[in-house]
Image (tube, rainbow, N blue to C red; front, side):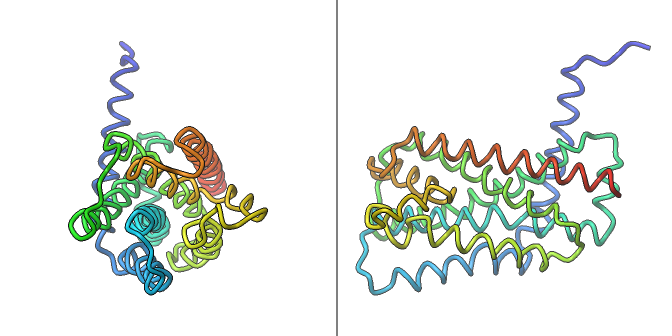
Amino acid sequence: MIPRPPTARIWRELKSAWAITKKDARIYYLRPGIIMFGVLFPLFLFLSFAIGRNLSADVLVPGLMAISVFFAASSIGPMAVPTERKTKTYERMVTAPVSPLSILFGEIAGGAIFGAIIATIPLVIGIAIYGTRIANPVGLIGALILISFAFSAMGIMFAAIPTDNPGDVMMILNFIRLPLLFVSGIFIPVSAMGVYGVVALASPLTYAKDIIQYALTGAGYYGPFIDTLGMVLFSGIFLWIGVYLHERNRRAG
């Protein structure tokens, strides 16, 4: 028997991951829970803080984009994986001739694409209403790809919680997302936090907002190198923990 070349296997795994991504887009993007927790909740939360504060578009648009991608990208996995556990489709995917890593990458890509799409909505509004300009278009595209991947990996990490009820995962996820949001420097600039600004370093949303602001305005608090390094670090942490937990659950099951 002639062994298949490595490129053939890689291509098969990529096609399998893409099939999972398309499945998530078709089934979950317009789910009421996704629209509520991934779009409307962060929008109203941001508006409740922004209205009446006379903030400039250079502050509003990057902040809203960061919040949008944070909540949207991290909501797909916690909705999709428990739902598929309930319907037993997740078990069929795990036992299929495709690697568990490809399954997770397919799920992560589904959340990342959704997060990037949602993030463009406040950008379009900013351009149309406030005349927002993009100082570095290529940098903004790269930033959105990296940020969306990181936050989607975060959602997949929490989706490893052994439950078939998406609400259980969303409740725990929001218990983490809200503190990360409030210490991120979106509502209170890091420069105004004084010695407490060090807490902002623990939130991936801090780097996400800062790198988006840098791409739009050409000015950021930490700079693109620190922001990129922070997002890559958090992406690796979320991905490593997520793969470990999903693999442990698969073996235990």
